[in-house]
Image (cartoon, rainbow, N blue to C red; front, top):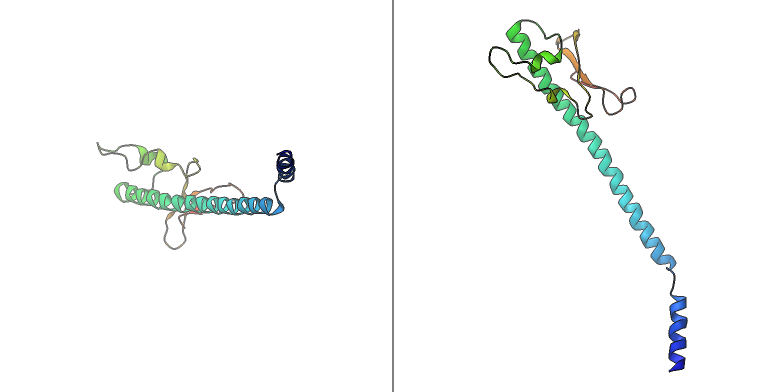
Length: 136
């Protein structure tokens, strides 16, 4: 009986830490999870870029409709949030915010050389660093 207790104690002492293989498996799993996380954040950023582009196209449509009805472009995007003649406003204030919670930029004086469309853009994820997202 005494011998078995000694053998069990010796085995427990030898098996008290992790083997190299166990540590490598855990590290490999962490590396794979980190790689997946980086990929998810990349796709999240590119999805925000695509959302901004779609929203810019919607704003551009509202600006063009305003021009057709009133004969000129609005002075600012805020004019598109005001109801006219008991009709609801074309856009809400929330629709004038980009996915990064900044106002879309609008310049009625800057026009595309060929199509004469006004410039509407978002500064993107990192203003000054990333490329603006524009309608042309």
